[in-house]
Amino acid sequence: MQEFTKFPTKTGRRSLSRSISQSSTDSYSSAASYTDSSDDEVSPREKQQTNSKGSSNFCVKNIKQAEFGRREIEIAEQDMSALISLRKRAQGEKPLAGAKIVGCTHITAQTAVLIETLCALGAQCRWSACNIYSTQNEVAAALAEAGVAVFAWKGESEDDFWWCIDRCVNMDGWQANMILDDGGDLTHWVYKKYPNVFKKIRGIVEESVTGVHRLYQLSKAGKLCVPAMNVNDSVTKQKFDNLYCCRESILDGLKRTTDVMFGGKQVVVCGYGEVGKGCCAALKALGAIVYITEIDPICALQACMDGFRVVKLNEVIRQVDVVITCTGNKNVVTREHLDRMKNSCIVCNMGHSNTEIDVTSLRTPELTWERVRSQVDHVIWPDGKRVVLLAEGRLLNLSCSTVPTFVLSITATTQALALIELYNAPEGRYKQDVYLLPKKMDEYVASLHLPSFDAHLTELTDDQAKYLGLNKNGPFKPNYYRY
Image 1: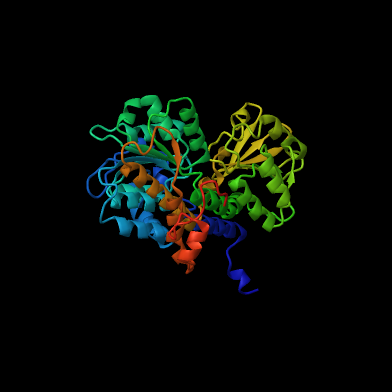
Image 2: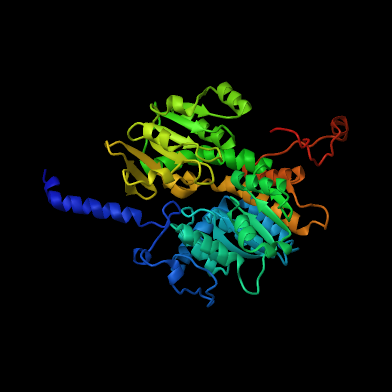
């Protein structure tokens, strides 16, 4: 009792608790990007900032965060040994010397390792963000301090988003000859505003389902005027980033934002592609009851064989606790679905674009929006029912948490090799079409990551190679092989 009476009064204790809670958020972790509260009211577009070398060729939240961002990048490098290995092997010959790469991806510590690898291989880079919420401000500052022309900050408006892309493309005395895109927005902007830029572009590398779909549409319409590499459907992206990354990051994003417990919860996952498979595996492991919606009978049959019920969304929408979209489509969850959801249903998206959930239909006078946490909104109906919407329907894992570094090393290495291949390809090797990464390169990316696990590959004997009709050094599977 004597010890207890040493504590402050009730009022004091609440105040103390509040101050402790506040201090716990003042971290420099990549999950909750470090921000200086005094800067929050001023748009980065209105601030004049220079790095230590006197350059102002960037636009980030706060260049003073560069030191913290550099630490984030150094941490990421520890688990991206394959990409660092590629950097060391190739930086002597500079395979990207003369390359001027304009990029539009998530700007995280892991992407920064890729960007700095491209610079080490001889490229000049200008970079913007493909998502208004996924930028780690301190990492963007570190890149700007290192001399990369980066235009991005967490919480951009739509106008800011396109302004940043425009600043990357439209630069006097500098014209891109390579594009690295995630989602197709950069490619779309160049087609719309600066079509003449394509006269110098040697190729486009695209890594998302959404962006690849746009490229195939352009190709089908005869409007694709440069070769493009579909990284999304390369084995090292599809089977690792899409599957294993989402398997781990879906839970991270949901728990950081909602503190939800999944044991016994009813969850519907829309889409059973690689992203959906990863999400479902994680949810099932925690004891959730998982339903699947699918349009593809093959994916639907896979879901059935994996022990999930395949349903139509209308059949379960009234009873489920969580709705997750992973389709790459639009209007998968409509206003009608949202109206029928039960109170406190959590709604989020694991696809690249913010088109899967009809968020626009929720911005009406009869509904009240209440921001309860960063990236968490309660949308309240007139009868008091509320739906918990995460990241305003944008990509959950990169908007609300982080993603595993190692698996991003695989994707980043694949992107780097795709850029090197397109940039150095002799004229005529690639037509104005969409290509998959050669299987030999997929295998090379995988081999670079095996030492992390102390894994040792078996080598074919000459007789075995002859029997299988293979080169001893690969490729080991035909192009039609499904891993």
